[in-house]
Length: 462
Image (tube, rainbow, N blue to C red):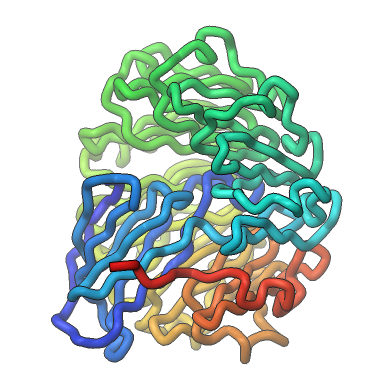
């Protein structure tokens, strides 16, 4: 069971309905290269306070207990149980390229909207499918996995929108991972295949393609990393090869990428990095000795890590962590944007910092004083925060999702908010989808075609 529980629980014994909130992400998203984790929360629907729940992927025997859950397998159905109440969270519902948004419907089909050349217009054969079980995104293309083990793609060919014939014939694919220009597919025999720009990872070297113990792959803009079952790591694509000392490790658990740099987290809580310093490839002196790191996030030019003590640290080509953020010991989640990071704290507040000229650090006073935020998501330069009362608020680039008008009144009873490159899409409790941001890329308000066709969760059959 994949989950990381590090912050102290503030759950209280409650008797209301079970309420779960937060987006189930995908291995791609944003059409770019930001590494991020996905945090779900369990609340009491009456008091809106955290409550203890059991989290279990339906295809795994193990479970984890807590008032929150880090979702490592968002393409798998997830059962959440609390006080004899059980619901099933649907696999990752919505994702976006830099140019379009796409939703996986309850009937196993997909619906996309936005710029037609960047994934917003699936071809007719894909529109007719009813057995899609996973959706992944690149910069300008989408890829889907069917319950038959096949994969399909559409969108810009330069972003992996065309699946090669030999890969299209495969019927044993069980996971997808997208990056800017490449998709990697994991097979049931623990081998991987890729397609897209060869110079960015679309051509897997022979020795790596022959491996039969690959657990997962993660891509950046210019290369890919793959984690092996023995805790080792391999890399390909891009101009910066992995150092030999790192290739000898056998205790790696997390992988992360920026534009040209890479980082990994070991089982002992240590983080390592390589690549150009200006892209985050060299650790700062204060981070090298740390052995309590539990999560890694990235932006385009740097990395940030969350520690077991609730503090964070960051390195790369970005401003230092502001003193008020660095002093906190209750940070429960961190997420990157193009040139910055946003953090969620245990008291329900948010904070952010970014490079000069970027919007996300300018948090409106009304949002800065909130103490009921339970989930965050981000795109290139905007952030959305989901409150426990179901209201979504946003800030950042007003043309890229940082301004919710004219749809503000619709952003209530929200269960999850998903991100595209310059857009957001919110899924409501009543199965309505509201999108905002760049209208040319899908931020066009309520998606009438999706009404009652997509849901965040369903009641578990007992």
